Image (cartoon, rainbow, N blue to C red; front, side, top):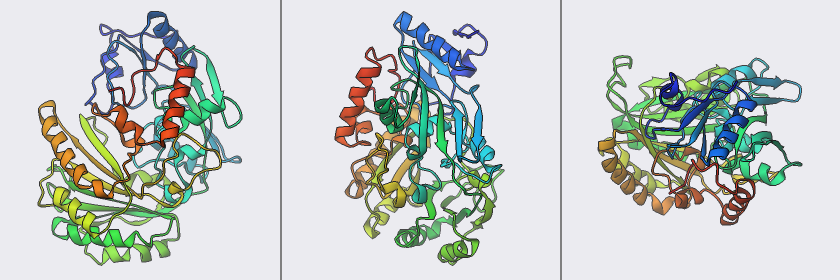
Length: 441
């Protein structure tokens, strides 16, 4: 029997709270869905009362509050079915990336998962998905074979390249909370069982040298090499080693599917720069989450991103001026290398056809309400300074927090695709039942 939790019920607060606390939901009811029937019941409850519907798996990417709406939480829908012969997985709506990686690894296979094991698989795929293997295999969205989705009429539909084709096109890249509740996806898996990967931390004094080296190094890095750079002042926590605790550091990450011998040769220029930590080594793919080692404690997080077309010496200098060790920036910055298969179109098109970014520039920080205005102003300065190198677009997957606008979201798509998405929305959700999502303001 489907449960409907109101504010007076035990469990309401736990269910409505996700990872990113910058958006607080106060829904009329929360439905902790354990099955497709629960999702259908929740949608029909909402439409009968003229309420909006929101969906939350882990709460990593909210942008709008579900106040007064029906909030469907999907964490209990955690089924994973692996077909090792076909190299596919069917993944239910509440599965997290780490669980899928572990399940696939039992068969020597890997999904196109992201950097955090805690992010929901379905929402990550629907937003595009820049996987750790993306430069060699493409976007995660390109490897969706089928979607099972409950639309606003309460009907469960299966969308593939040959059935519900417009819905299939739109959901892949443009369907995070806008077109229905995706209760399961079927995706490709890949014969990857190990990596040469990890990270190196460098001291603040070496920031310019490291970033300059990385900007030059990536020009010839093979597609089998994924990499990113994080600029961050580490928290002053006793659990951290003295070399990192409370210090500004540069963290260079690597994920290479070639041989360990070739990997060692490729990262040698960075070892020559004298890292203060070095975890780069042969590893099972199941340990891929350790490369970024992203935090798991819920925080009120505010972020912004832009796609960059290039990263020359002037761009490096400008980035360090705003986010380097002497800038005292109130945020962390990550540069994630794109290109390779991430830049190429696929045989089966999706809504995510804008692929002109060579890098994602991402800035984020935990901030209490009184700190947010100053943080926004700092973001304005950073992204205005980096605008000469921007494509003018954003990475849809990395949009989160209450500042996301419709205009900002639209830059993640080609103009014709944005119009086509709007047409699909009108066709499958004419009453805008799914109205708690990115870009509402």
